[in-house]
Length: 297
Image 1: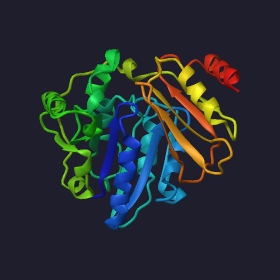
Image 2: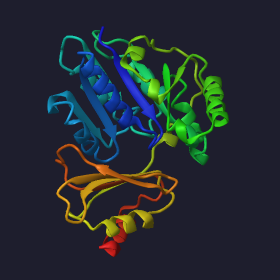
Image 3: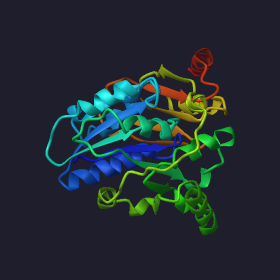
């Protein structure tokens, strides 16, 4: 049977980076991956990050809908329409506010018989684990039915914090295997089994947040981008996007963490969607974001 892998984790925890690592491992192991991406507003931006690894017909982007409720039929259809191939594996990246328990329940039925029962992998950012304030319940929910929990950015924490996080995760899900990021390998994935564990139900509305996507100038001055990012509401939980800066020919991919840290890196794929800014969470009011952009330019 073909493995069906679902990757979940809080906003900014490192899901897309983990997915890219798994795709690379799959290709090195002569596996044939098919990737389904779900994101707020514009999943095509993230899908373009994979074009140096996969062809267009190996990637599908689902934007906007919540795949654990209103978008589940679209997701099932995408899963059931994956091409038949030798040594295949289907990888789904859920958006950062997904009610993971509900998603796994829905994916457990109505999926073509060639696929194995869904296996969930969670990404946990060690230093930020359960420091999400009112969103701690959602973050905890995302690991309750995980077969594997991958600890990301653990190098930024001391051993005491790492062990504290491991103990907390084990309390929430005693059946999950917990590994550090550096130990992740496709061979570990092949040995995982789907977990059938009684979980605590969460109010599904807690996983529904507002979001907004806006076009950016091409190019944009570096100082303008920094000014825009620093002026955004602190209540936002996810800020990311892509544009060209100054006189550079190459596009850059940028992110801002809830802590305020801004990171930029070269966008190594083709940009089809055009320069964009995506914001998620309380404060993603379209009129306010438009005004901030206008004031920056």
